Image (tube, rainbow, N blue to C red; front, side, top):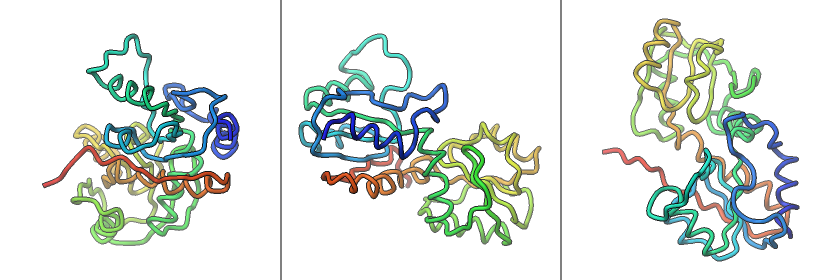
Length: 240
């Protein structure tokens, strides 16, 4: 099957036109005319993953390895060091980032992982309702997502309406209409802003909330009759 056919299938599943202006989803490495027999799916690209892949594999990732314009390729710097290895092994790459967040990832984590009934979906924000003590709800989220610890901003003792954005969503806080916001990459000043808004926060991690990308997409790709490998890269963080 030509890469172009796979690209069109992905575009129908989660249109690349939905990506944010700053994003770089789409075909990043390879040729639309390339014949594909093997597909690997991962949240990111790392060296260990590239080394494990066979030549001529199509790697579909959530995060783009090329995010902003590259003016040079110095092979001892990131991401050129990884791109060089991919070119040598003829590994092509398609990224599905902010488009997939909106069409699949956020709702999947809310519904399939956290077990919630979705109230509504507005762009990158998925809403659902609970009626729980904040500490009980926080610990349940930590347990289900297998987070290393609980990191939160508690503005009320009871949680009723919850908003969720996987990955890094604190820039969306001003538009959140809920008691509690679940997202990753919460910084100190984000916490201060949330307290002033009386919006509780629960940190759900970037990798921890998005690594489901591979298992979601693999189910659709198997309909193409190609060999699909879930080869998620490792979390760059370790916790002691």
